[in-house]
Length: 62
Image (cartoon, rainbow, N blue to C red; front, side, top):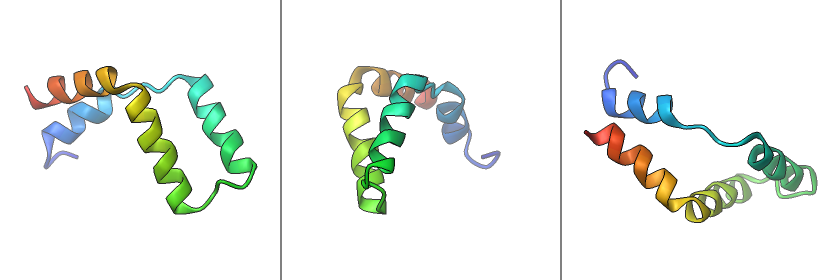
């Protein structure tokens, strides 16, 4: 991360609520545990929190 300060800044900002993490883990426990499932979970989370995600990117890029 030292070689890419934008990525470092982005990672420093990311805070995913524990409730959201628990919901995702429940999906995994119920069989949605393939890499394609995990990616879909992440993409759905971002889509549901697009404004927050965009704000993280904006800060990281500036």
